[in-house]
Length: 610
Ligand code: F6R
Picture (cartoon, rainbow, N blue to C red):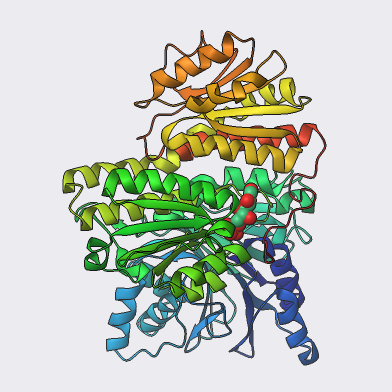
């Protein structure tokens, strides 16, 4: 996830671009850049770091230009550095891009053969070179851009400027957001509305495959697949600038919960082939023979990422039949673990900077294990030090409580488990294809699961004053009980415990009375009957039961006073779906208790000290 901005009009574009990028910094902040045209020549200014570093690096130049584009980056391909920062340039063509180009590797190799010289490790640079290769043979910049995009698979929102037509910006969108701002004789493009809200409240939302050609005299929009002009509605935005930054939500946490269909789609994009029944493990610097020879896997993490690790064990042992051990990183680093030859350690970390996780990662390396990290931040310490990396591509997570980073970690673990199972011959191609089909449906299923928001709000209204909460789960959803309890503690300061439901009779059952809400996770699975009997145990002791179950479950209504139903997925993906109502419940209770949702007391987003 990155942020792009563009401006054409009578004003000096430079401060407009910089101000717009600051409003988009929530989408990425590891490097930034702008490009602008003066006397028909493009100039580019970029640097690693935040927008304010870019701003101070250009301050003394007193730059002026009526047309320009800008970018704030959240790295996906290539580390955060000046060379990898956007805008990218090929000859007189400049491009800013948000998204992921799936076939950039092949495109790049083809262009290199034709003599194109690349200066970055990014996927974006191929778009510049492709447009550049067509510009001389085309009537216009828009025609060259269209021809170039015909070769590109993946997601993109791009802004293009060119020395060949210095009075024009081209904007095109496919599966990444892009909006246009319509001012008085001035026009904007951006990844999100807050970027230009200071200048105009009139907005056009571009849809997939739409191209906007922006000049000083207006904007024309067409569908590039149908080659036809499109009439668009201009919307009037009433949000305040701070609301707009959160996409209209009150808090980043809620925005990030609702971003999950997009985030998961980005995690899986280009990473497997149904026809070949294969995960593209080369991207993670892994080979089938290495996976085939793996003897044991250690999964290590902290907090919510540790919950993902626990679920990863269920997936890996079940699909790939490989023994797994899961550790909390702060325990692993001091417990003198025995690491047999042929072991892989999987580190799971959103930030890639958690001190205990890094220490465990280094300890595992010292003891001879290979390390793979499942990480959200390109260029982070964990990613730099690991032998293999699977980036989750969920975009920056700003709310302290992890939500979309968690479900994308689970998505990455699912893909990795399939890869190991295939290498070890534990799954047949037919079974792999079926697991991939379930994965392709997942963003839509998550979208459906999010519809429980109002039902959860009602439950939150009833229970937000309690002092304790118990979460019960079994099997692969037991860690979701831990996750629900952690989130509630963390952002609403209610004491909560997560338990494997079968363990309840060994102690926690003594707590149950009419004042204790008990949330039971009851997805369709081989342990459903077991959890239903655990619910009976709670009910017969007067506990207040909330059940989250799979739609179509006819036995659940009579067991619980509150029932929330979730769409059906396969067992491995059910924790992703079932975490949604629990994250929403913690969120609503936190808001009702007037807590600081995005920055809970005593907590930091990245725990870089021991
Ligand atoms: C809880 C939460 C934390 C993090 C933990 C690890 O909502 O966000 O428990 O999961 O601090 O952080 P990362 O994944 O960055 O290593």
